[in-house]
Every structure is written in structure tokens, then in C-alpha cells.
Amino acid sequence: MTRILLRKMKKNQTGTITAVKVGGELGRRVREMGLVPGTQVTIQGRAPLNDPVALRIMGGTLTLRNNEADFIEVEVENDTA
Image (cartoon, rainbow, N blue to C red; front, side):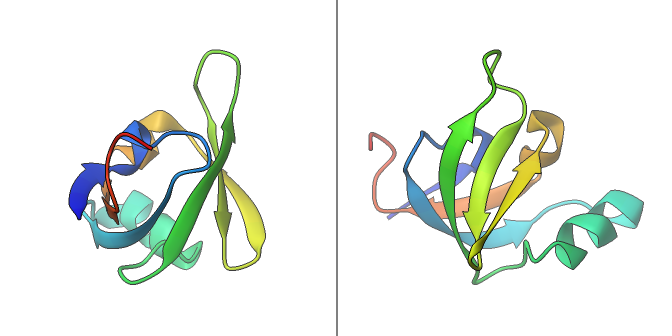
């Protein structure tokens, strides 16, 4: 298993969140959206300029800007999926 930032994940790649490395208002907001350690996420797609990224999480779809995704560490099977 490899740990990468959520921003580096590719379309249809699935991983498990291992850490959310941001505090304050942004950290609270990210955690309230369900992005907490142990949660499985799948990259659904990206906008034409790769920002934002659409995630599949807990049966719903969520979008994050890349600057927000930079704070979320994910464990994936491999980083070449």
C-alpha cells in the first residue's frame, strides 16, 4: 500500500483516508463533510483543468478544490492505477 495526497489520485482510483493534515476552519469543514481517517473515497472525475475533483464518498458525490485535497492523505493499493 502506498500513501499519497488525495490530489494525486487518478480517476476511478479508490483509497482510504489516513490523515487530514489541516486545522482551523478548513479542517473543521473537511471533517464535517465526512473526510475523516478510515473513510473510503473513489475519484469520480475532474473538471477540464483538473480542479475541482469529484469524489465518491459514503454513497454520495462531493467536490473539492485541489488546494483542499492537498491536506488529505490517502492509502491506495498502488499509485499507478
